[in-house]
Image (cartoon, rainbow, N blue to C red; front, top):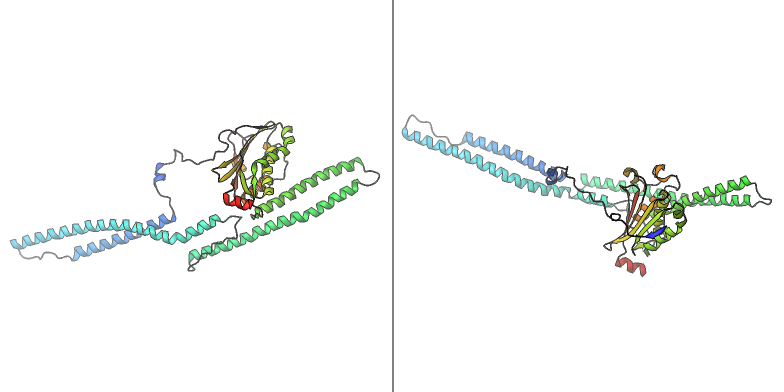
Length: 406
């Protein structure tokens, strides 16, 4: 049954991590133990130790070699002079201790500030390396750090990472070429097998019933192999990350079309489908986007238990993101296993699906197509049971719209 109703609250909500009350408040006040802080504390500690040692030596020299009152035979005048000089000497040593301690404390604070600035200057290339390496993914492995400057330890680290990225890029390209080439090459023997079956069935005089049953079974297997090869080609194309098409694509009609194509399956399993779809457009490949939505809906229809509920919502977030959220009912799922479903050939246990239909590439293709369009796929195990699939894509902007329609 296809119906339209408002999606329950929370289906489009994002998950936010909040600090629990059990966490100590001191952790919030203290800075993170970063390398910069550790270097700053190390510099300041070394300065404090050296400064304290220097002041101790200075005090010792001043105390031992300062002018002492002369020792003369008993003389009232000399006694008063010795007493006055001893008092001045004691006061001088006391002031030396006090002022030296104040100066050491002030310079320790100054050393902390200077150490913080110096550590930041030293670690600036490392932050650049970290930010660049974090930005590089499987879709832009051609980028390199390209760090310049003297060949110190940081330069050697950057060069090592560049060589690692080059090896990863070569491995990814080889894998994609292999999948694409193998999928193309396997089409020929599959076509020959179909031709052989056609010739065997079309023999004059008819064929035995067992042969026709075998022909039907083989054709089902061939259809499954064709679907698997087509999925391989789509996955390889999407993982390539280079879109040849940047057309203006409306997602709402694609969702309605995918649901209509599966109306018989939905009715056969007595599924309830609720939709809340806004008019949202993105820029990209219509073929890949249609395949992405079809795989998402096909996965829900195939794996939702009979009599279950499927909720689909399409909305725009501040005009900058298009968000497709699909929630399907079912038993409680393991969050760790759900997070791995976007990997090729990953399945949940048979307890959820009741069957092992499909080839294990549906959500992998969804994730690859979303990534090729600058988006992402997120999978969540619903607390009430079932699976929540969320696709986030960049909504079409004015420059993209002009390019798509130009």
